[in-house]
Amino acid sequence: MQPFNRWLLLALLPGIAGAADVSIERLTWAGVKMVSEDTTVFIDAIGTDIWGGNAPEGLVPVTADTRRRYALITHSHNDHFDVETLKEVLGDRGYVICHASIATHIASRGLRVIPVETYVPLERGGFVFTAVPAADGFGAEQVSWIITLDDRRYLHAGDTLWHGGWSLIGKQYGPFEAVFLPINGARLQSDPMPETAGVMNPSQAVDAAVLLRAGKLVPIHYGLNDPPYYQEVTDPLRTVQEEAARRGLVVEHVLPGMAVSSND
Image 1 (tube, rainbow, N blue to C red):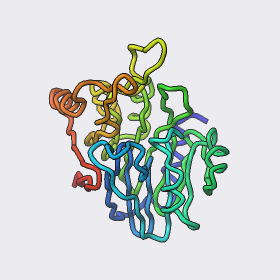
Image 2: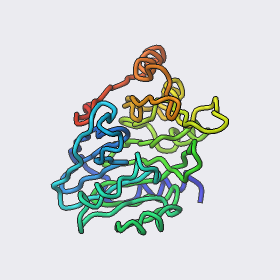
Image 3: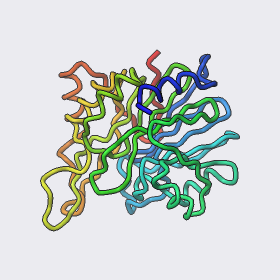
Image 4: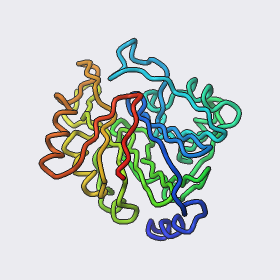
């Protein structure tokens, strides 16, 4: 089945009519938390200090007090998949939602898993989750997530590379209320050291947001520079803000622990 038909199926699913309130909080690094009524959704939530006291822009707690709890995982690298934090926050009532290609690995870590295939929507707690293609710069299986609530759509892109699917995703699923995109153009040490980044850089993130028809870009996955082991581009936040201003795109800089503003 082609993506267009998947989108028709998504549009027919129950639970997306009406106007439920949603609050969105940026978590540490690439993490995002969304809450609507009795449902909390985490995307790439990290609560463990894997940075040795130097978490970019600060380490914030990952908590939930709703009855329904779900955690979306773009991929299984340890800066996007925090086993112990997810066990604690999901408890015996929550599930990890991930692409089928990594479901066995996630389940082997002692978490309850709901596997999905690319382009196949899943409805839970009033939200609709759809995995769409991404390109991992370091060889892992990876997806981006479209999160739909009523007539509002959001996209979270983990730490994907630039790829050719942005225009298709934007046409079939857009416009998006907000897109959460990596911006740091990171390179990891290897022998030989690559000149090509393994993560989107600021200019590519702006291009992707424009093609996605985003109301705004919320930068994620930046603020860590530890050469020669991990090298990001110089001042990615300032660069993405300048590039976005030139293109007429709104960028909202949200610190970890702070709320993402509504476009209303």
